[in-house]
Every structure is written in structure tokens, then in C-alpha cells.
Image (tube, rainbow, N blue to C red; front, side):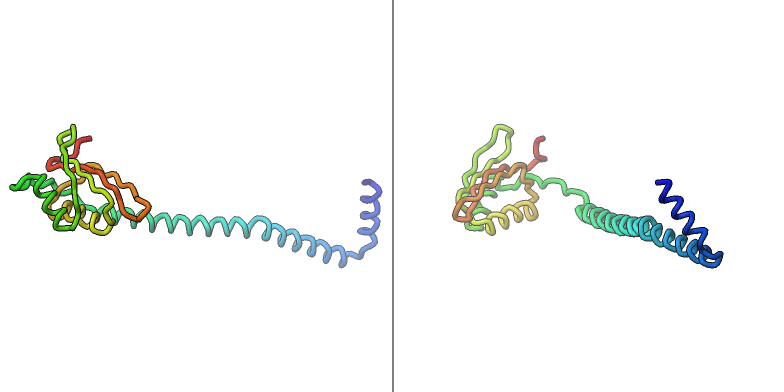
Length: 163
């Protein structure tokens, strides 16, 4: 190692003052370029990427807040239908072309069951009950059959849903 340093010292002392200055400037420029490529540029790219992620998160937060605000306050459930809950469920299901089986659950809600129904009429019927008659769906279980129909179990309540 000392031999290598001695050789470098001899080589350096063999250079003129002008060559030494040019070599020092070249070494400084190489060092500055290495520092720029190895440190400064990656830090600037990380900062830009962080700013882009922060902007995307801010936009997502604004979208979420808008969606939450659009939900608005929930409407209070409607009073019990004059014809009764079970006749209303049966009538609207028949109008939608669905064959519904109803039974009261232990919690006092009106349970319903549908077998092998297509998804379009089923969800249109459920949406109509929620929007037109303000009947909340307290529970809903859906199982897809191999023929692309659904088996559905659920419960409605005129009052607020329990727990």
C-alpha cells in the first residue's frame, strides 16, 4: 500500500503546477457529479414522488368526504304499512315476479326466503322496498347457485333494526 502511495506521490510531483490544478478541478467535478447522481437526484425524486402521493391521498380524501356527505342523514323508518308488513312484502314480491316465503324471526322481524331467483328482479325488489316503502333490510344472506340464480334469506323491520 505504501509503495502505491509512493508511486502516486512521485507521479504527482512529476506534474507541472498547471497540470496539478487541472487534475484537481477534474477530481472536484467528478466528485460533484457523483454526489449529484448518487445523493441529490434520488432525494429530489423521492420528494417529487412523496408530493404526488400526498396529492393523490388528498384527492382520495376529498372523494371520500364527498361520498360521505352525499349519503346525508338517514331517513327515519316509515310507519307500519296500513295493509301490514307481510301482505306488503308478498304483494310487492308477486309484482316483481318473485315467489317469497315469509316467517317471523325470534327477534320480531319479518324474515323472508327466496330460492333460485335471478339477481336483477331480486335486487330491484329489495331496492324498491327500501326506497319506496322505507323498509330497512335488517339482514341479508345471498348464496349463488351453479345456474347463476340466487338463494336469499333476510329480514325486514318496520322499526329500526336490532343490533
